[in-house]
Image (cartoon, rainbow, N blue to C red):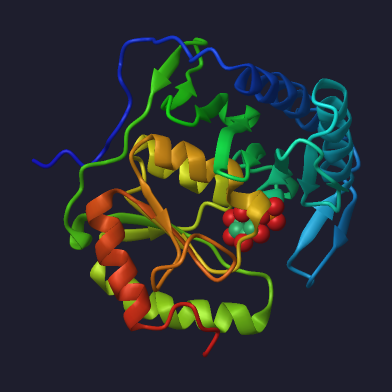
Length: 282
Ligand code: IPD
């Protein structure tokens, strides 16, 4: 029997002492509590297409996170999915998605989260992904590992799966919001699906990357995700031992994000390059 599920060090551990991590966790807790107060009337607005929705809670949560960060870290830059943009005077920028997995949130499915990342010019510093409806939070600080809070409040250190073969790999992915993007993604799936154990579309890029970190997915790929979707998840995955790249020697970006344990990552990148997964060709 192969050990496909990676993971957690079963003993409770101590989260690293890092003031930025502590700040991100406090803000994510407040934000998660706000979004968990689901209003009786959830208002939905469409963005890039009818499929792409945003609610009043996305906006309220982003406002809360921005005001907390401005108070705690004046001078830091901020970029948020719902349009927040503050210039950085410190070289540091917070990158946030107030609700990643908004469609799940709208449909009252639990797979949504608040994603808060901090980076400077050298790369990601801190990442926190808080998923209140799943009763868990993921956290990482550069060079200090990736962690998950359990329902008991313990923090467990994460590591990626050890799956080595594509035909035993469980792969997460996601889809964009336009017909042309989705036509290309359907073409890519036709190539990838027969080669792997199965595919999951869970609906939150940030959580997909945390699933890679804890080994419950062997890899994840998606074309078209934004900085705010993966800023925190990227660090959490990397600190758990994942490789996170784009295709053709590029770093992760809107063209493509691929995250996975080293063995599956390499094989998946080769398949995705071969079928031009960085193209929207149908
Ligand atoms: C979306 C989610 C989804 C992914 C989409 C993203 P949002 O973010 O991460 O899993 O497939 O590409 O846009 O819109 O829920 O913040």
